[in-house]
Image 1 (tube, helix red, strand yellow):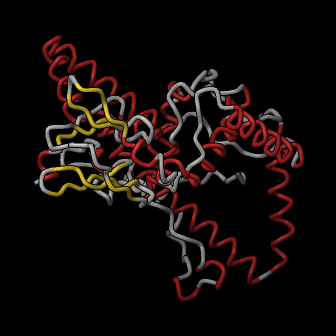
Image 2 (tube, rainbow, N blue to C red):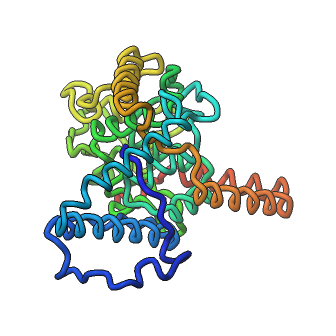
Length: 353
């Protein structure tokens, strides 16, 4: 990722953009093409992003009007990069500790990935986590389709390497989080609604007749199955474990309906807990990143595993949880667990009506 200049936000420095900034009509052709930053829902982050954009557009305008600025600015940029090289090791920023598996990936890092690749805001993700402590991981598993026990190689400790690996996988899985909220993935309480997950079910005459994968691939339910609305839909954030349940009968894996046609989840390269292909992709990504870093003398920037805003939100949430736990004690904990179970298990009665 390119190094970025640290600029004060408009909130912290009202004079930052108060100078006679050109209007949109006065902007150069290239400056007008700089996209607006995606809103996160946090005014401090959004204001700073707009301030950075304004600075970047001003640089473009001035360089377009007078190309004598280009070389001096480039030289200053190189000085900055060389200074950063003294603080950054050649393999880039690392997590504080190596997550041995996907299931214990740094949560702040996962939230950064989700905010950058979904239509959910930071506030909405924190709210979902408040409703269900497993919400962040559920979103990541839905987006990546990696098993919880997927083993990370040592190279995955490098923040930028894991970030790039995940970004590539997001694309392979169809960027599922881009329209998650738009598809009804968050209900009125702020909790995740997994009816907008991997599979959508169609009923006719009180019986399940069709299953549609999020890829839009559809299959008809073959003869011999009699699935009605007394079943519940569970784990619908994972293509391979999403199932219909009606105890004491065994779960029915929804992926099995696509096995014959090799469509739906079978069209996405499957990653297993000890996948050699996954380890190789991480190694290849590491080698590319290392070469880039060495090419600029160790100056390539890597996303930090900590974000002050995310960290603040999570700490605040943790404090609130502790306070509530002390007030409600065991009864509250039991009630919440029952509610979580109920939310994760989707009744099919309303859908089949």
